[in-house]
Image (tube, rainbow, N blue to C red):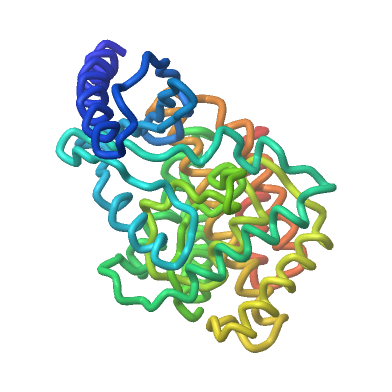
Length: 339
């Protein structure tokens, strides 16, 4: 896009200035010749570039206002770093223009390297980081996962997936079912004890790093349900695990959290139910987001992962009779879509 190219020129000028200051401050001499390559982009408008020269590397974030706001990233990075979490160190910032200069946490995400053999070890590290930030006192000026936010997220499903992707409008019966399901999921979320919630704590946002993991993409953090992040970690957008294995990991987390006085549900079965319902809320939201990314932003690749989320939801419906309304609703949508 032409406007992005103009941004990139501005970013390069800013980067040269900031690196000159940083190298002088650190006593590293003059800035060496270097390459600037795309490090990654995500489902938002943010882009990342990697600067590499003479054995040093940095990551530059380009978060164009008004679509993106860097300040939450800066504030929450500071907050998480206080609990010993390996988050990017911020060397320079221009919040007005949406530029950040960060240290490089590596170029391999958990998603790049995880497999059935190393998953236990990688998830063990991920749980240590999660437990660390769940112990932070809830004193930062972060928003809460309240009724409005939970409902706004859920409404992405009928608005973008049902209406835009399937081309179906809820009839009055379906609307009633949807309302009942939404109320159940929201009530379950609100009934849970609250902690700091990353909101996208999954292998794609965890870097293989030292100390492990490096944690990214935390700028949307809120105070909310204790099961949210751990459910997100094991019921991921881009890879799935056998249910028995997930249950074992959840139990490991639950035992450790209980021992650290993190306010998990005292009974493991109650914790599992809360996790199941929290997962369904998130999965419906993400299905809506993936449809929106396609229809609004022209990025079709995320839609390919929608069946994974329906598989998660179907598995929960099968063991949670209270979600029969959702089962009926989804069956009707599938029939309508094939018709």
